[in-house]
Amino acid sequence: MHSKVKPWPRLRRGLEHDFTVVKVREDVVADPRTNLEHGRVRLECADWVNVIAVTKQDALVMVRQFRFGIDAATLEVPGGVIDPGEDPATAAARELEEETGYRAARLEPLGVVHPNPAFQSNRCHTYLALDCERVSDGNPDDGEDIAVELHPRADLPRLILEGHITHSLVVVAFFLERLRAEAKR
Image 1 (cartoon, one colour):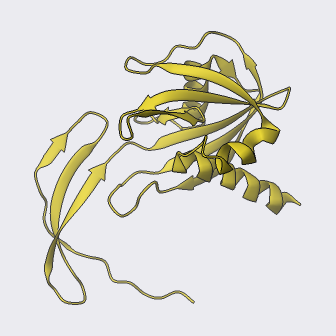
Image 2 (tube, helix red, strand yellow; image 1 turned 120 degrees about the horizontal axis):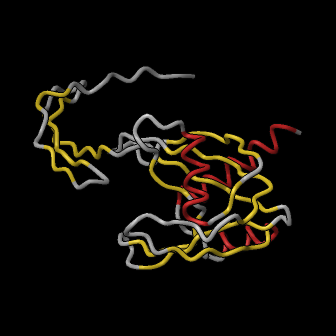
């Protein structure tokens, strides 16, 4: 059953602060049920892409990088920002090669999620990159310090359950892959 939820009208748009990777503003909206005003923070981000990269030897191509939100390094799939006007599949192939030096023989879309619709406007597109081969040393963007790691695909459940992979969008990427595989059966 699908309930009908009314939109919250924006009464006033707040000042926008541009931090390059994200624009932040606080708008004033009206509760459609009570008409009371509420401030709501909104983050305007570009869409993102995540890539589950698998080699011909069935190893996962992962990246380890420092994340400032938690002041620690995380184990993740390659990914990044989709450039304005760029096709998500093109961005997936570009980010994979830039961050890892690997190129995929095939890319398959797995799905799209909203990272945090409570206050973010963007989407995260997930791709499965198959038969990946190393073609270069990679070329990370300025401000990226990335270590590439290969992990046996069979180790994935352990890596997640033991807390080695904690980035929620990475866990979602692997969940989307599993759902897609189960749907094909």
